[in-house]
Amino acid sequence: MSEVKLVNLKKVYPFVSGEQKKKSKKQKANEPEKKKINLQITDEGVVAVQEFNLDIADKEFIVLVGPSGCGKSTTLRMVAGLEEISGGELYIDGKLVNDVAPKDRDIAMVFQNYALYPHMTVRENMAFALKLRHVPKAEIEQKVRQAAEILDITQYLDRKPKALSGGQRQRVAIGRAIVRAPKVMLMDEPLSNLDAKLRNEMRAEILKLRERIDTTFIYVTHDQTEAMTLGDRIVIMRDGYVQQIGTPQEVFNHPANLFVAGFIGMPVMNFFDAELLLENGRYFVKLADEKVRLAEDKQERLAANKVEPQAITLGVRPEHTDLDENGGVAGTVDVAEMMGSSVHLHITAENRDVIIIVPTVDMKGNFRMGDPVRFGFKGNVVHVFSKETDRNLEF
Image (cartoon, rainbow, N blue to C red; front, side, top):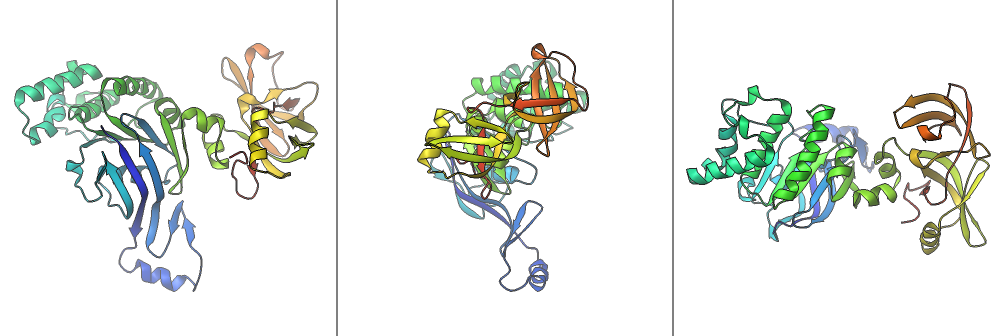
């Protein structure tokens, strides 16, 4: 079993000597906390991770995703023992490991820059950790050979890293981790140094790998495509705080707030200033002259939350926005991007940039800059967000 539990985990980087004094002179009495470059500044220091709670099941694949500086790599390094935990508790298999050395946590980590020993062969790199543990030579050779076969790098065992491509080096780094049969596999943006084609191939390899080894994965990335394709569940982070935890489908279909809605999905969700109406016990959204009744599941959730009529931020994904010659919201074409099976239509509407995905089979002609268009949407695909809190009003 390899369950991992994070309870109110917190990371604060204390001010260096003299920095607190300089800050105190500049800061007025009773002045509220400030934010600088996505990090919260308090009297304790710079808060990188705040109140992180997560239960990870045995053999689950968890992905931490978010923009640079959101605290995802710091969280991973606390699990690895490479960063001291400022507050909260970390359990692996029910054992509190806050003060346990990294080598005694039974974890393995794959880094972004491979971190291979250049003077060693692939075989020696993969065997190194086992040799330090004084594992018998025959067992080492068996484990290395088995890992190499899983990753299809057997033919490179006698080469040195400089003779390998980026994708091959990353396979070696993964192989070095799995020969130890760790309880938890930590991966810190392992594909970010690869080109697009290799990234796609390695994503598929990682998916195959998790089916062949019995371990729990915690994977960090800023790439939402990796998060959506790899994770059993996704943890979306921003400014050190968890924004939402859920399956890829849950966070896509039911974003908890504006940040999640704008971060997950490509192209990004369209947002509009709109109104939420309540007429005869039924909810509608009104954008310009377009008035749309919400689907029954949305009606039930809004009613359960006793949501009042109000000005809202309306969210509609590009793939859920439809051209409508007979009505809808008026806009003007700025750019038409041909993507093969579809056209990404960039238009200006309601003083905003809007993207509509139009399947090429539905096109009746080419779009040109300045062309007038009209678009609409259905009541089952829209998202309603509070103007005050940015929260999804359904949840």
